[in-house]
Image (cartoon, rainbow, N blue to C red; front, side, top):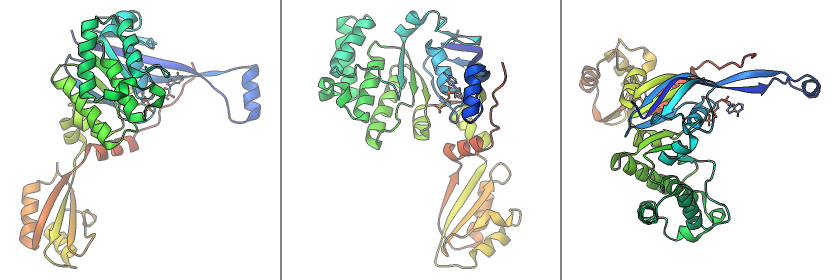
Amino acid sequence: MSLIEAQQLTRSFRIPDKGPGFAAAVRHLVRPRFMERTAVDGIDLRVEAGESVAYVGPNGAGKSTTLKMLTGILAPTRGQVRVRGLDPHRDRIANARHIGVVFGQRSQLWWDLPVFESLRLLGDIYDVPQADFTRNLGELSELLELGELLRVPARQLSLGQRMRCEVAAALLHGPDLVYLDEPTLGLDVAVKDNVRRFIRHINRERGVTVMLTSHDLGDIEDLCERMVMIDGGRIIFDGPLRTMRERFGKDCAIHLSLRGQLPDALEVARKTLPELPAACSSQPEPHELVVQFDMTQVPVGPLVGRLLAALPVQDLRIQESSIESILRELYKSRPKPQDTQP
Ligand SMILES: Nc1ncnc2c1ncn2[C@@H]1O[C@H](COP(=O)(O)OP(=O)(O)OP(=O)(O)O)[C@@H](O)[C@H]1O
């Protein structure tokens, strides 16, 4: 049995069907009408223990709604989900003992209490034995560099400081599955790096399963081997990041630095590579040339060889599609999800 198993997992919301304007608002008061918005639409998903999965998609795709069903905050409208064999909504307390959750925008720390007191309360809520509490806190404090922060009330912490404490709060009871919703949102580069290093550590060294949603592609490339992409509530890709690149990242660009200024280099390149449309080659500077092509159609090696033979090349760089550019293209080409009458 997989750690997480979802079958045809679906969640709809009833939302007011108000037209624009004052008259429509009054009409809605007298005779309210509703529409159905399907946020998650028949998802099948399996996650094995020890995996690190990026759950990505554009705004409104259904990521948070899925995480809310996996954590038991929301019940599915249809389909089912099991986490470690438990129904997360019905067995919410038992489920909570084994999971850690960081919703980047929400705090689980008591605002006016020093962080240490919040952590102690959380330790009590989760029934963490004193010896485990001391050991876990010592370890988290060292890895996340909490130190003095433990004495400061949460409301006085900066975003980055608070986020490190949030991550500690989510992991204090030693969960073996963590859901991280935008854990690095708004953090500066150094803190982001610290949080990422920590997440990598608990996944790789301790085998904690990580399920992460993030719009930060650095998080995804740094932390996850598998990407599940959701759009309009449906999974449109599920596989290794590598496969995502192979399947969707066909574009490749060769950047050439030329020896000296060669105004006719573009002409030469186009003549050398007649199989590529003229627009594939460009010359942003007199000593630079960029050749773009579909690497599934044109083999890179011979193409580079022909360019080197035809032009005085000083240096060259081959750039494959980044995950960022692939996602940008996929997001751009998506159809808009529609609300329906119930
Ligand atoms: N409580 C709710 N009531 C009505 N509609 C909701 C509710 N929660 C979510 N939705 C709708 O469901 C859809 C999916 O929302 P969700 O928050 O899961 O998306 P997301 O992928 O997490 O987006 P983002 O990246 O912006 O956080 C959206 O259209 C949203 O407006």
